Amino acid sequence: MALIEEPEKAMRLARAIASDISLYNEEKIRTGIENDTFFDAIAAELEEGRELYKSRVAPNLYLATNFYDRAVVDIIFRSKGHIKSKIW
Picture 1 (cartoon, helix red, strand yellow):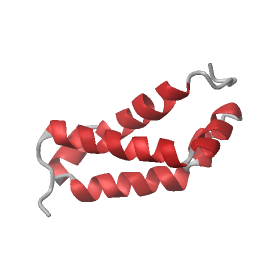
Picture 2 (cartoon, one colour):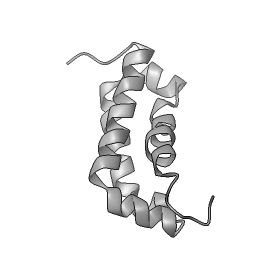
Picture 3 (cartoon, one colour):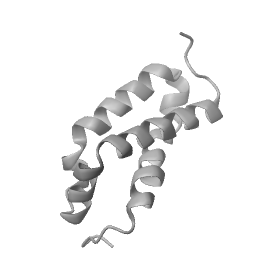
């Protein structure tokens, strides 16, 4: 399989991975946000997603962008704004 070299496709992949993480880890995410331990609570899932993203995107595009990190914030955090938390 060829590596993704187009920024738009890389961004879509990052958002799809973040969406899957959000979908399959709802309880961990909710608890992590409530207790301000989000990154610890789903560290393994975020790292697995990052490795998948990195393996599918051309190295120069991966190093030059932060699409994966932005997708985590846009897809996971933004959609969980209704969860009560000390951080907001």
